[in-house]
Length: 306
Length: 274
Image (cartoon, rainbow over all chains, first blue to last red; front, side, top):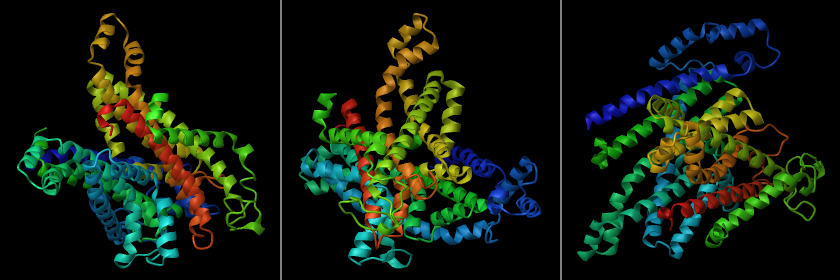
């Protein structure tokens, strides 16, 4: 177990380094002078020079890179340009809201995907399978920025059941979580179906049936337990993608998370803050993938020897 | 082809919608009843009527015309992105698979893995945020995140095919590497690439709309479905049609490409079929 985790970690570290380097170099992509872009037109040259010095952009690039890396090791992501707050502080204060939203979306998608995926596999080729197949393609094709406003129209404006935006309690989590988790629910349903189709053809399932077990026991206690193993990996990968999807969902619902902070920082051209947000989202994504890989090896020890 | 469409009603529906969309995109200037940027302030936020079947937006612009013109942006961006990503991905991925060794390790382990370390759209958002908005930058950002999928796919395919006997036979006959790759390997990996391209059209349209929704796509006043949805968001209470029609256009388009891609995949690979 431990060698596997260590090997996996060793594979992850270079990726982390590349991601950090990419995020560092983003500010040098800005056409023209990033400081002039941040300050807007009509700023004096001395002011631009002062800010450039403050951000360290007047130093040689290698030195900037070294200072950036050293800062990261200390947990220092630089200063926000607009509100003079440490980038790490801004991000930390918004992070829990995004995690809450991502977990809500994952729970929702599993609540949909397991029953529908199993039903689709068990009733393969029947009407139920075709309807679920159609709905899951629809779910995949429905972007969160179309789904979100439509759900607000229906559940908040027409029916008055749920709040339009903001964060506070379970009722405010439902619409954003469903919006963010909709596509994930569709993908996971297809995964569960495919995985269950493979499992229910296996010998142990035939044995269980031959023993005279009830069909529900065969499907849920025997086949589903094995069928969910590959789903975990996909779920891990997709949970990471939720962090990116959260940028849009949080914008729609004014959810005070990392995604909204990223967009606000982009609009304000607060480049240090944008870099910090991107870095934290990408690193979270890598971490989630790592954890899901390790989890996968716990539930299915065979892959450790690959 | 006709046999394929007869067996897949959803794919046939998808093909019809994609065809209609292409016509709408090409002929938008003749089909649109009004100038998509023309403002009639007296008609602002009015709902659907005979005069304006999809209603008007907050500046009194005709939403039907804007949806029609919006299809141009979607199709233009998606086609360009899919073509460029496809060609770049197949070349780089194919080369990695064909050459193997250090080239393969570098391309797969370093380039592809580090691009995949960013969740899809995030890298595009990052690039556009720093490069600034604009059609060329949008396409650039989407190609950067798009080619990886084709590269991985073609690498895997080439690895399988290059060991087959007909490739060996060609090599034994003295064919050059370039000739083997383009005449013997490429035609054999094109089918899965086409499936990927069909699904890739859906993904590119969604990605363009996402970025435009966030205000990071094509700058106004060029109509884009994502930007129209963003405009409509602040009028959900008083003008829900502003959100409704662009949403329907977007979802139908993406759904059609997904239907086509799914049906093509099932058709080409009977193992996954229902």
